[in-house]
Image 1: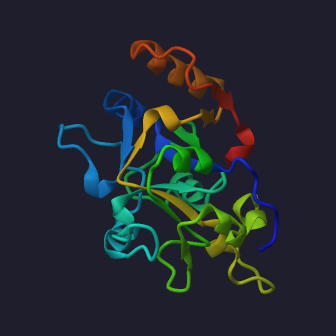
Image 2: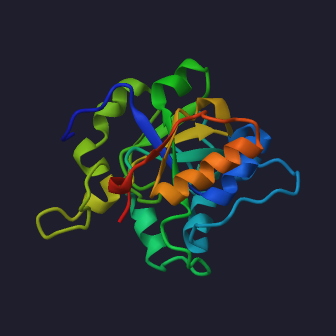
Length: 216
């Protein structure tokens, strides 16, 4: 596929900053089907119709199950999901981009930790998306699309948006310790994250970087 796979291979999880406190308290990220029953709830930034589809769509690799049995990451920032959230396509969300942060992990570190995973070459709900569970197959991801700033389909390429949304999925749980960095929108967002680190006794770890190019 076009583009060269970066090694190590970053994977990006978009969350609302309020969810970060829960992640640190649990010391892990959890798949929707395997969330602890501790009364804590992630700040929702997803479209319900899409989540209903992911609840039943089977993953054709790894330990199988459905997409909701996995913690999802994208292979690039500035995702289609971020665009939809920040432009009002998600009912009930009107806070813009600033509170949305990117947790960055490494596919190779996930594998080295012995965690089960799977990944796709496109949007998980597309019928013709292919699934894999061997990092050697990362060459099947369209890396130009994954990192593209402009990803809308065109007459010349009617499949670019699907390929942009290729996913890396970690089965059930991913430890917080595997998050290597956090990308944020601006200085105010960085200070907010650093303040949460302070309150949870985790000053300076992982590093928080202002990455405006990851946003719209």
